[in-house]
Length: 307
Image 1 (cartoon, rainbow, N blue to C red):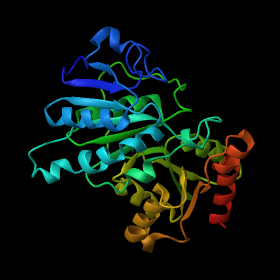
Image 2: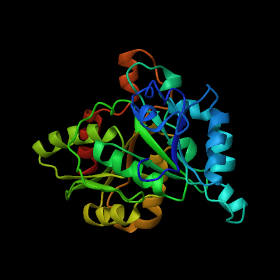
Image 3: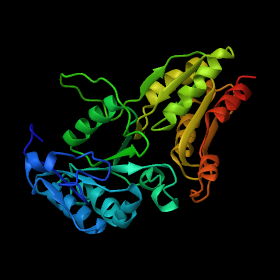
């Protein structure tokens, strides 16, 4: 916001309250109430306002207090945000960032445990990225703000407490590039967001058992980084996808299709996809845990894949 006076933030409680997870804390005092705009509880309205502001030259960052609430703005995101550059014949660009907390938290109930990447992935004209560390959260956010395309940035409610030393100097992350988390030889594990940590926990157990998994945080949910993914598949010949998204119509399903179409001849075993259960997320903690992929399931899946 220091670098570009056209950047502004809008959403519920983003101003003096600092956001529901304190992501915008201190920005209202520094940049004023117009650049850090508290909105009514009206997602369809303020999302449309942000898209209109982007059409006229601003670079709005629209926060959904919870990503599930953005379903109320689905019309604006799909029919306007994703399509206006095309339907206007290129007269308008929509340099907007839509971001907010999502995923399965700790007993937040079904409505507050949504994973909207499966909803938004079919909208033409929109890029989607998911951050998983403080480093890539900053790098992806800056890249998204500077992009001329509309970008949806998915943050996870359980990752806000992560701490990491990040560089003082300027850096950005490529919006279309995956991250190699752990090189390996035996199996390619593709994951993103919070599941990165479940996978790395499982990887420790797998290494102790003699396996050498390659872990890739895909980060870019649309489009996929098929260059890095393909090189890994050609090396390991086995693929395990681990996601928190729903199994039916999720990111894992799209990723499975993309790998099958492009790298089928390199596979020595069918692709395995571990996803959340196709049920509303229960409020009860034990039941909630059972709906999401756990590290022990990842270990078992790799053992079966590598037999």
